[in-house]
Image 1 (spheres, protein in one colour):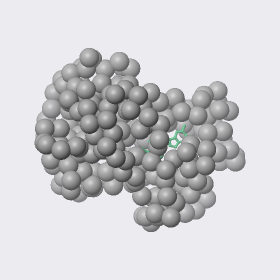
Image 2 (spheres, helix red, strand yellow):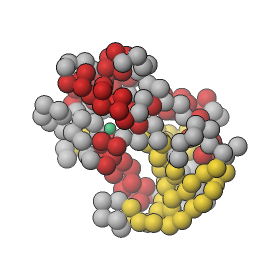
Image 3 (cartoon, helix red, strand yellow):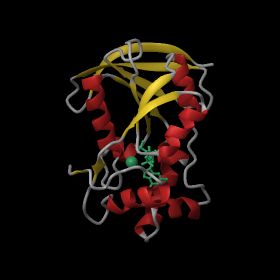
Length: 207
Ligand SMILES: Nc1nc2c(ncn2[C@@H]2O[C@H](COP(=O)(O)OP(=O)(O)OP(=O)(O)O)[C@@H](O)[C@H]2O)c(=O)[nH]1
Ligand SMILES: [Zn+2]
């Protein structure tokens, strides 16, 4: 069983003007320092809160790399949760669980023509190594058994359902498309085609 270890207020977002609380946990299983950000006290309000399980992407979240859409999804989530409240679980699962250096190796292979899943496979990894059991422990620690989920990935939905969390509805993110040689259009199309992501490529949001 995981428990809240500490919680403290801070401001986040592009202009550091969105109030939130950051929460650390004890008792997580995979040894990573996962955190939750709570907006508008959503964990203690009545009603079904919006949650997102966001997998870490240093290149996208921090550097806004053109190769993916992670940083834009993160900002979209923070802005939506500022409006309607929510809980963002920031999961330290870089590169869908293969780690940063392996992801950079996968990018090298993608530059040579492989798609995101083929590159993982070529390096000896499965398409996706992520396991959401620590996210479930975090939700349990926050007493959240009934949620709305922000994602395009059906695997995340199934992981929560299988763990006994009731998911009322799923809120998709926009398609954040970036053009150019190292743009993310093919990457997003591959996620839809091979990863079954429920992403509507027509719901385009240009940066
Ligand atoms: N191995 C690998 N990981 C990547 C690549 N591009 C992004 N990632 C990682 O993928 C994770 C995000 O997963 P995605 O498949 O983009 O999306 P998702 O989180 O499953 O689904 P959403 O909830 O809809 O965002 C982050 O951990 C990124 O670091 C890539 O080309 N190769
Ligand atoms: Zn990314």
